[in-house]
Length: 285
Image (cartoon, rainbow, N blue to C red):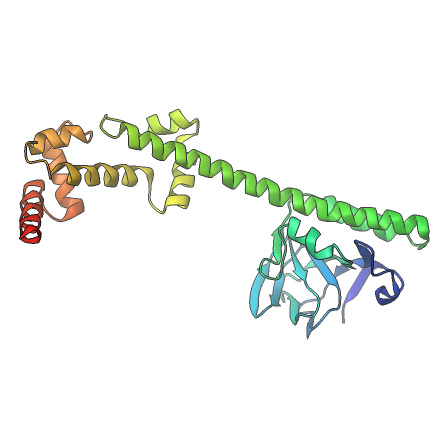
């Protein structure tokens, strides 16, 4: 039903030394025909597929994943799984089967598990490793060591990408924290989003993108909300006029402040203050 371009299979993995950290079992390169599928079924070893081009779907643990080029997926032992090539753009993938005492540990270091079975990898190194494995046609003790080494390399490349993605996420969080701190300590001035992005060292467009993704709102909207919330707190001080409160939260034009406040809070600043004071009187009684 489908064409196997090339593969290499070691002796039955169940007969191999089960006390090894990692045991290579099988690897290969395959160009699937439209709609070709495997399963639902259970494997007794770990199996990683990496799609070079094309696409398909993968189902494991009752979760369905759409897999595109430069993505891979993990099949874990003793778990029902199913995968199928797309009818229009069937995938061309490499695969790698293995087991061992440390297999699960190394996979977790690579960010892979039954709950997170899909990964992305943009380079060509994974394919190159599989081709090197396949080139070792004769399975002797020396080549066995080479295969195990290639397996470590394969997992290490995936792990490296996961660590880089994690570092990027941490880096983004660092920038967001810097921005939030800057707003907290400078909201009373006439600061702008450009000023904030320059302070944290990011392009304004990129800053806008990561801020909205992490916070759910734009930097400008966050700044407005922060200022108006501070204004609400200041209104409890009856000695401050609306104009003074306006300037205290970074708005030099009290009229603009009042219009913005009513738009966001639904009441003018003066009505908000009266309503708030009335509520406090009722509570105190």
